[in-house]
Length: 423
Image 1 (spheres, rainbow, N blue to C red):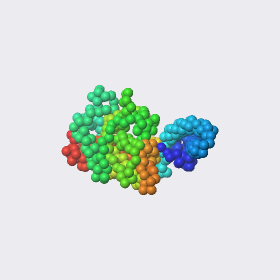
Image 2 (image 1 turned 90 degrees about the horizontal axis):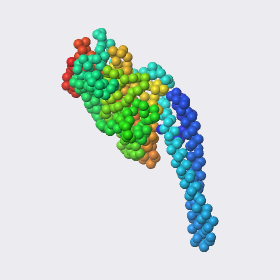
Image 3 (image 1 turned 180 degrees about the vertical axis):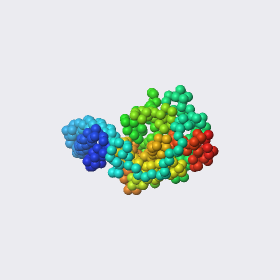
Image 4 (image 1 turned 120 degrees about the vertical axis):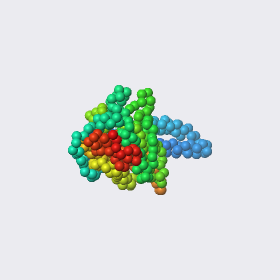
């Protein structure tokens, strides 16, 4: 969430950032926060004065008793103060909660380089790699090809679980496993700590990581439990430090987390019932970094380069795009998407995203560290998809498909898969 001092001192900047995201309906929240903050500071000053008066009266009462004077008027006046202070403290606590609730509804500041639009077709292309190629023979859909090879079953999975689930078998299942290990090995060599997080977390930490009100419709809630299946390993990896103090010497903290992820994926996208591109359950290796504020944009470039390095080794053409303001989540200041070449669709399709959340998540979760001067600082948090295997598999099945219906395994994955051709 935003710093209350920022909202107070740079109100126009906050309002402008909201407008850039086309979230004008959130503008009244700014006025509410300012009004509550003003009332909070006034009441806090009154309460402090009363507490000072109470302490002063205590001294006068003691002096009166020592001097043998009548302290009754002072005692009566002092007896009235605790009730007033208690009432003020109760209102202050209520105001503090209300201010925090509203601050959590305001979006992060939008980075100045973000394209201003609601239309993702206007995402700005930053750079590209490789030459997109469309084979001369007619490509099969990735789902059809995987089933023809006996490496996927979308019929039996639908019978058991409904649409949006799948069985992977044989060569394609090994390819999936190989992608996971390839990504983990790549990041561990870069100094990341490998993490396997819990697959369920409670509501309170989830609200610290994301705007759960906007995200809840795509989450799987465990019936009768305060628990949600995770939508990405980023969420538990960021939330693990909730209400903790990180040591400055440990920064930056770099995690490479692997997990299965679960999403309802409702809305306009729908679910590919016989494919891997958009499913309810999928595998992902995620990068998460906590760092000092002055380092976050440098690290943003580094973790984006990590994902690019992996797709370069996979020899799959891609492009990096700066996502338009209207498509950003409220926790993100800027997001780059990596879009990989899908020759059957003759288009680049999103395979992952890289986000800088500044200190927004740390403030929501009360994660902080203290510098050498003893100043409390909220670290910046960043996340980036290393490999979402279902998206990468689609790209491989399309880019490495052969005319005879076999799949050439990318060279970098052959040691993991144990074969050069899946047929």
